[in-house]
Image (cartoon, rainbow, N blue to C red; front, side, top):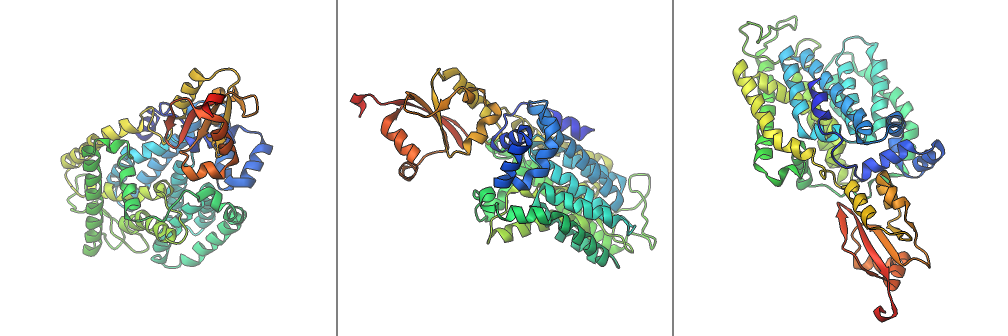
Length: 468
């Protein structure tokens, strides 16, 4: 409940940005129009767009972002359950609290895209994998298929699951069988998506260490939060320290064999005298470290390695790995052993995150402030004004606040004022696009450019003979 309240705080304040605009457009268009869109460019998001339709019917930022907020609440609950299963109830509680206060989680819990839903399915699949009954693999295979249908790159979770399965005797064959079933369900999407890769991922570059560092920046709130870097830096440093403490304590616990032969342990917070609150690995039982470290590390590392050949890495694409970090940080908090110290450190983590949470909820926090851009256009446009989109897909990006754009006509011979909706246009582009060549020849820039992230609007007026 706390995570849901936190992510609902200010959920409607930031403007929709380009990607969210496409989500809203896809979720509100007719099925024929949606099919054409999916056939052309966006098949990888088909399931999300269909799921979003009943929410988008209500309109507004709150309704369209609500599925992501609910997904964050579900993921938080699942993380707490996994922590309880692998360690103690206190580790589960603390891991859930850490996950809930991460600024990155609030950021994507307030986003009309599929990343938060990918995370909750990843958590659910991991929970099912950690069960005991062989029959669970039928449900696990369906969850893996669902994971892929929400985002194909989230299947990078599977190598982390492989690490867990290979350490459990007799689990490999049913696990592989469940993956084969999931592969059958995912095959149509994989075939279609492979043909749309260039349209989908043209913007990705080969990542290096700066891009890896950006993941840390995003976990602590994103670029806007780091305008005043002290608190985000302290937040990230404390989080990393807790993660390392959780790994160290879990590894030490396993070495010392803190579990009894039956795999049970005393609860360190319930009046017992055990020193180690994190479970080690018993017979057939994975440890928290053995599950969480591969979960947190392998998707990121594999994504970076694959991207050296075919760029697929973006911090938001590996959001589903963050639950692994939260589990380790929860274990680190529990490893402090004394309740006052644990809660004091958690309070410090929360305090260090406050400025980041405020930044995440700022009205212009997203990569584009399309709402303000539309308002400025509405205030300045006149009857008869025309519009030119360069590239043409920018028409999709502004449609979510489309009223002022709908009043603009297509550029034609009778147009005297033209609003150029575009990215930054450099010299060579003027020569390559015939529409831009015509605009430059017949019109002159007459208004100050209004910039919103990568989207900008610029007013051009027709040249008079003395201008030629």
